[in-house]
Image 1 (tube, rainbow, N blue to C red):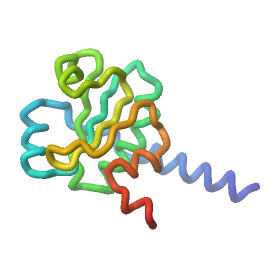
Image 2 (image 1 turned 135 degrees about the horizontal axis):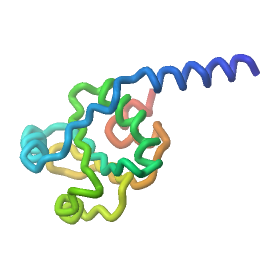
Image 3 (image 1 turned 90 degrees about the horizontal axis):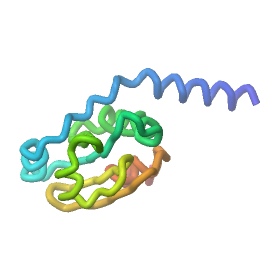
Length: 127
């Protein structure tokens, strides 16, 4: 029982010690440039009032930290409606993964770190 408590405490401490979410604010130009470069991209449709979005932040921050080549863009659900329409996004807390110009995965409302990691690093799930 003590080991479980210790493990949970350590995991919580690691999550809170990660740097604040550094996702770049979405701009069409930066997104297009990343696509043209063939980059691995993760879009996080976020709203500051959304508890699910907040629950996703530690996983997104961990991916940014662990996969330096990953380009992470934050789309503001409240103010970037034109982009949401282009991407056919209907809800905040949507995560969309791209490899260059190809969309590879999309999830809404998912907070499980393993599922979020599998979107951009499926090989990491094999370990």
